Image (cartoon, rainbow, N blue to C red; front, side, top):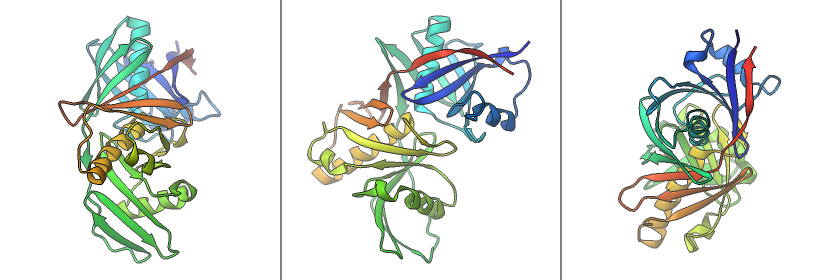
Length: 284
């Protein structure tokens, strides 16, 4: 007997989902990495879900390179769709790394309460080729080649650096490498291409590209979209000297549109968007 799996897709961000009680053998990280390869089944993230308690679904999440992850907004939405299709569930608590996310079906869309951000501090270590300065939550960087950029680091279960400097996308690879050097490890890097549009009009559609840790540049990233919205709300507050309250932020990525809604009664954010079921198979 082989282990059954389902394949789901959230705007080009794709997932393999396996139920723990149906697994015929434990899966090592190397085996998971092999299944994630585009030469095999292929996916951006691999989910092992425990459906024993249908109200509280525990998940293990692995990136394409086999590394473990503690958050995946698009994968949470895909998991909710899977649970709706198989068990007719409309709302579920999904738990990753002991953090609970409330998910629910809203018509043809899926909503996840992504919680609130923790803003990260930049390490104080000196790096010869970099000049760093801090402006509140923003970190400004100047390289010896005169490239300058600004970003905001934060965590929502996984860590993100949101880069919002003009033309930052043109230098995305060197910026990603530089941020890894600053922190000493790889994190998710989001590049906002039109931050000034949002500063002048909070209804502007935000253009975002995300370099996901362990998966590379993906068509869509739900936690990346959420982190970008959180960063934008902070920048808008500073720029306009007032808070954003109960506002829908529209994030456009290569795979499509996601909405992030800032809740009016707290500093928490809802991620809203579509997911699709692609089919079933067996792990060989």
